[in-house]
Length: 223
Image (cartoon, rainbow, N blue to C red; front, top):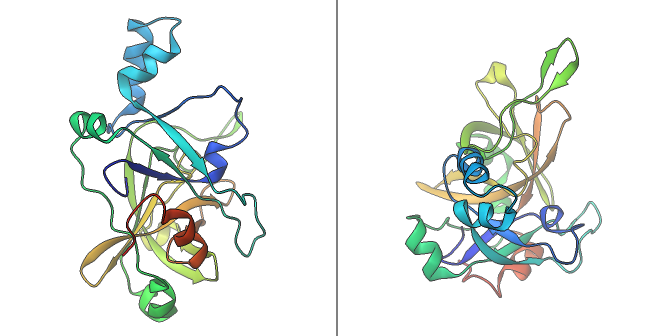
């Protein structure tokens, strides 16, 4: 959440769906357990199951998605009913970065910054008799990551376990990557992609760029 009624996500999470699709947002810690219980309570009624654990909203996808690698425009929001969302969950909206904040810090300072990724996705690949599997999913988790590289649209974050890192994986797309800057936890970027087994790199879309800020400005007050 980036304000009282705006949920931030990725364009590839809100596109390629049927025209009659409905979007729901849940801030529960364990969404999967809630869905499992709702399936038993409302068998054969997916709308009732969704309403049991989430709030329905309206998705807005960046109109220029998909764009080039230099700026893929992989950013979207879901607008939610503020009163209903506040009644259901207690939360503090994330703090967005100022314009060009990551560029101003530069690689050296970003490398010494504490980074944290969060999401509801699966875990890194496990090798088994049938090949690789990705266990878990549906439960909000967080993990430390470290800075790797910065370019015009992307912040690449290292997920290498020997360095004490965790990371993002399938189902974490659109989720937050926080950087501790000046004593404040800043929502610096969102998870977009990474390596197939989820061992090495989390490729995240920067939120301090002109393109990201131009898209977000109609929905949230920018710092």
